[in-house]
Amino acid sequence: MAAFQFHQFSYNADNYGVLIHDPTTGQTACVDAGDAAAYEAALAEKGWSLTQIWITHHHADHTAGLMKLKEGSGAKVYGPTPTRSPIAGIDEQVKEGDSFSFGGSEVQVLETPGHTLDMLNFYLADQGVVFTGDTLFALGCGRLFEGSPAQMWSSICKLMALPDETIVYCSHEYTEANADFALSVDPDNAALVQRASEVKDLRAANQPTIPTNIGLERATNPFARPQDKAIRSRLGMQGATDEDVFAEIRKLKDNF
Ligand code: ZN
Ligand code: FE
Image 1 (cartoon, protein in one colour):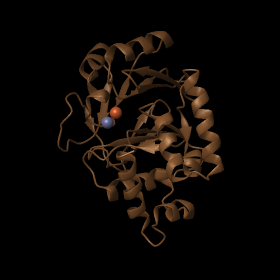
Image 2 (image 1 turned 30 degrees about the vertical axis):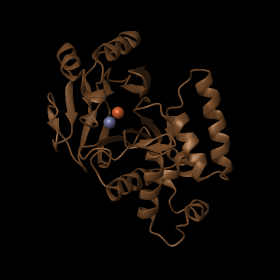
Image 3 (image 1 turned 90 degrees about the vertical axis):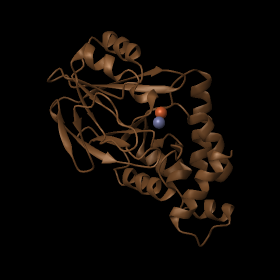
Image 4 (image 1 turned 90 degrees about the horizontal axis):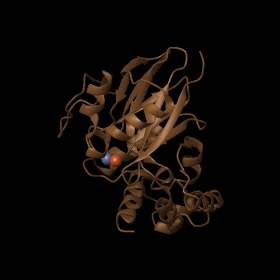
C-alpha cells in the first residue's frame, strides 16, 4: 500500500483543514468542513475529489460548510453522536472503538471529550497519523467549553498513549501564544526553549507550525506534562494528582 498524501490548508483567521488522499484507490477525505469554499479550493488545487468527510465536533468553525461541501461532492460524512448540539449532515455516527474504511486503510475513532462533549479524533494507525481537532494543539490543548478537567486529562492521556512518532494534525495555529504560556510554567525545559524559538521563526516567516508529533508534545507541551517535577514545584503542587496539576495548568492558561 502506498503512503497516503496529506494536504493542510488555512481558513478563517487560524483554522487548518486537511485533505487525506490515498493514491492507490484515488479516494480523498477531509477533516472537518468549516468553510466549503476553502475546502473546495484545496481539492481543486490538488485535483482530488472528495469521498469522505470526518467531523470532529459541533463548533461552527468545523462544521459551517458541511452541507455545501457534502452536496457538492456526494461525500459520506462520519461524525459524533449528538450531545448538546446536533450536527446537520452526519451520515454515520461513530463512537469510541469504532473504525471505518478509508482507501486501503482503517480509520480508528477516539472520543476525546473536554473542549466539547462530542469531540472525536481520528487515528490512521498504519499511516502513523492522528487528527486531534481542538483537543491536543501544538504546545497546548483546547479550552474546556463543555467538559471537565478530568475528562480533558483523560483525553490527553489517550492521545499520549500513541507512539512518539505519530504525526499530529490539529485544527488551529495557536502555537506561538501557546509557547509563551508554556515557557511561563516550564521555563527551564531546554527542549521547550528550543522549540519556542523555532516556532517564533516559523511564524515570523508566515509558515505553519503544524503538524507536530506525539513525542515532541510529550517533551514540550505542559498540558501533557503534569507529572513533571519542575512544573509541579513551580506550581507548588508536588503532592497533587496529575489531574489536579493539569486542571491548574488549564486554569492558568485561561487567565494568561
Ligand atoms: Zn472548537
Ligand atoms: Fe475550533
